[in-house]
Every structure is written in structure tokens, then in C-alpha cells.
Image (cartoon, rainbow, N blue to C red; front, side):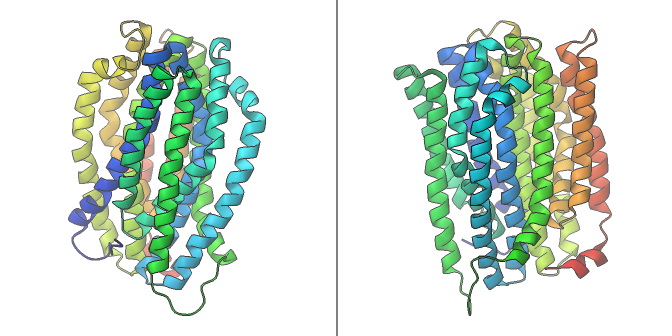
Length: 447
């Protein structure tokens, strides 16, 4: 059901809209959690390290899908807010056409250069073959990832956060069952982990695309609706390209950090792989809430209700802090039990590495929550330069500090310490920009 986010109190509106988004991305992250759990428990720690190693490269490709999602979602939200339904439909069709071309190009490049990418991050020889196998199968499923993300962005732009969460819940549960069946029963190893994810992502994508086009068709319009618009593509690209660059820079930065981690051996890689999946599950969930705040912001800008954006910022911070508290308690105090679920040997070095990472980073989840809410406001207002600044500074600091501190007596612990430093500076910058928006400029620039 489409929902107008421009009426009602911002707090309750955001809770009702963002909570399904939060839980849907938790289930989406279960794809990766299930892969790591099954690899570590039913194969061995090298398999867990291989899946985690490939994961950092897959984030580069996911960055493009995420950028297409945000570019389409922000513009469609604004058009929905101002009730420009003909242009809204054109924006959707334009996104699917242009994203299909982009996805095909990335698939080809990824398959051709997967060996080079794995060599670039110093992948250890004992996990190279499995890392490549997992990455190649992932690339075959790239269209599913692209078009699901786009469909999810369109649902969110229309104020519907419940429909995609249903698809993801079902496919995620199926993914866990198929992971276990393919690996434990059929003994397919890392290939089984990858194929289970491929199949379940395909299921959720196909359902989402079908329902999106049914939803778009049901919106009443008058006159001709164009299938493609260079102007709207340019508007969406103005949001999508900076988002892709930002996410790609993050992925490249993470790959550099991964290469530093790889120099400490497969036990450290396995511990980090387990912990970073838990970390990314929560941070990605917060990012999805921030995407919801972007939709809320863009709809209200489209409707000319600028005062509601500031109210949305306050409501968003309160909401993320309430969500953050139980996650912090679970990870900080229960991290040992959670990390041990992923490991073949839950008493060794890998366990201590993963636990230390969580205990260093989780106290700063409250701070990164504020940064991500600010990012949501900046994306929704299409202030992409300001949006990118904080994240790029965060990334730069983490890469430099990781390289420097890893060479000291701190060793791998120095890498984990770099996370809070980057988050603190990025939060200060993004919050400053989101609290000092020039609304006169926004009014002049409206679609």
C-alpha cells in the first residue's frame, strides 16, 4: 500500500515506515550471516575466511546496485510527494533500462578480472580457489541483486516498507535451509554456500519486480507516459553517481584494509570475517533506516513541507538510539557466544580477534547512528557533495590508521582501533551539514 509521508507526526510516521525496512535488511544480511555460519561450522575456518575474503569485493558491485536504488528512490519520492505521477512512472522505467545496461557491463568486467581482484588484496593461497569460486557464482547473480535493490527503493519511495520485507523474510529463511542442505547434506562446500544464496536472491528479486510493476501500473495517470527520459536519468544520476562513488570508495578502502588483515593469516581473517558480518548487519540496517529518512525527506520536499525535515531528524536520532541499545548490549556482552557460532574451533585465535573487534567498535554505534540519520537528510535533499564528505573522511582516516597502526606493537588490534576514530570525525561533519541546510537553495532546485 502506497503511503503519504507528508502528513502526521514525524516520530510515529518514521517508526511505522522505517521499522519494516530495518527488519527487512536484517533478513537480507542473513544471507551473508548464513553463508559464514555454514562455511565455518560445516566446512572449516578456511572456508569461512574464503567467503569473508570475497565478501569485501562483492561490496564493490553491491555499491552500484545501492546507488541505483538511492538515485531512483529519492527522485521517485519527490515526484510522489508532488503528485507528478506520469514522470514518476517514467523515472521507474528509465531506472530499469539504464540499470540493466550497467549491471551487464559489471558482470562482464567482474568475471574477467576476478582473479586479479583477489590477487590485489593478497588473498592467501590456501583460500584463493574457494574465494574465486564464491565470487564467480556471486557475479552470476548480480542482476538479482541490482533489480531487487531497485524494486525495494521504489516501494520505499511510494511509502511502502512492508511488501519488500515479506519477500526478504521468506527468501532469507529459505537461504539458511538451502545453505545447510547444500553443504551438510550434498557436501558441495563453498560452491553450495554460493549457489544457495544465488537461488534465494533470485526468488526475492523476481517477486519484487513483478509486484513493483503491478503497483506502478495501478497508479492512475493521464496522457502518454514515456519509457525513457534523459532529463530524469540525469536527475537520478546526480544522486546515484555520488552514492556509487561513495560506496565504491568505501569498498576499495575496505579491500585495502582487508589486504592488511590478510597479512596476519587465516585465523585473523576468519575472526574478522565473522565479526565484520555482525557489524555490517547492524550498520547496514541503520543505513536502510537512513534511506527511509531520505524517502521521508524527499516526499516532504516534493510537497513543500520543509519544516518537517528538521522534525524528522530529531525523530530519526531517537529511533536509532532506541534500536542501538539492545544491539550494543548483545554484541558487547554476548559477543563471545555469537562469534563462536561461526567458527569450527570456538576457542582459538579467531574467536579472540572477532570478540576484540566487537568490543572496540560497538560503544560507538550510538555515534554512527547520528551520522547515518544526517546522511539520510542530506541524500533526501540531494546535497550529495555534503553527503560524500563525511564518509570519505571517515574512510580515509580508517585506511591510513589501519596501515600505520598495524605496523606497531598493536598489530591487528590497531586496525580495529581505526574504526571509532573515523566514525567520530564523520559524525561531526555530516551532522553539521544536515543542521545547516540552505532551504532557499532547495526551494529553487525542486524537481
